[in-house]
Each structure stands twice: as C-alpha cells, then as structure tokens.
Length: 139
Image (cartoon, rainbow, N blue to C red; front, side, top):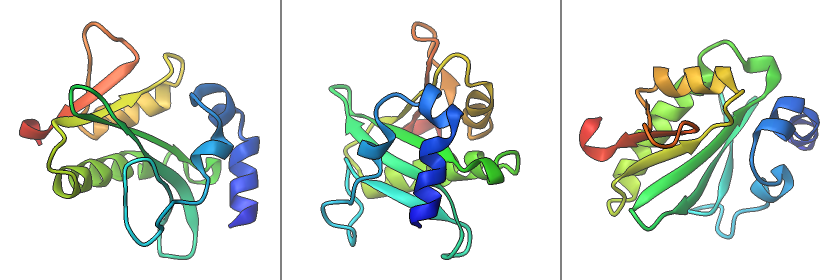
C-alpha cells in the first residue's frame, strides 16, 4: 500500500491535474470503518490490488457532493475510472440522502478524466466548463 501511494504521488498527471495536495487527500480517515464525507479511500479490484483512490470531498451549499478520484497509471485505459465513478455516484445517492447530486472538478486538459465522467453519465455544466454533474433524479 505504501508503494502504491508513493507511485501515485509521483504520477505527473495526478500532481499536475488534481487540485489540492495528494498527501492531504490520502490521509487516514477519521473513522475508517464508516464512509464519511471528507474521507479518502483506496480502491481495489479484488481487495488486494489497489488501483486508485476516491475522495468524498465536500458538500456544497447547493447540496452537491464533490467527488475526487484518480486511477493508478498501470490501470488506466481499462474503464476502471468510469466504473468507479458510476459505483461511487450510486453509492453516494444511497448513503447520503441529503445530496442533490455529485460534482466532479476536472482540469480542462485532463481529457481522459473528462471522458470517464461522460461514460459515467455525468454532464458538463454549461457555465462551468471544468465541472461535471450528475443529479440524483437523473440516475
């Protein structure tokens, strides 16, 4: 797990295109047994091989939950990002009934992440070209 985190920290795409500090996003959750807004989680394929992380970032004033994620370079191009976003969104709607939807903030040059968002049925916000949203009533 330590090697995985170190490799993710060294990935240029993660460092350049992810807003915020990767170290901060991967800090230990307050309560690892309970999924909470503000925590990050390592994502694995089979419970053993970590492929990325998911961060339930924050709930905005309009009750949108911002998600942040990254897939390890060895696992990009296999649709894990789209699957992660779809499952995380469905889970968020189930787990957090107070949210109206989920939001992704994606760097304009991160074409692969934008493609993942579209494959997971997120829509680009008209007035905010780096934001992708999926509303609860549109799942």
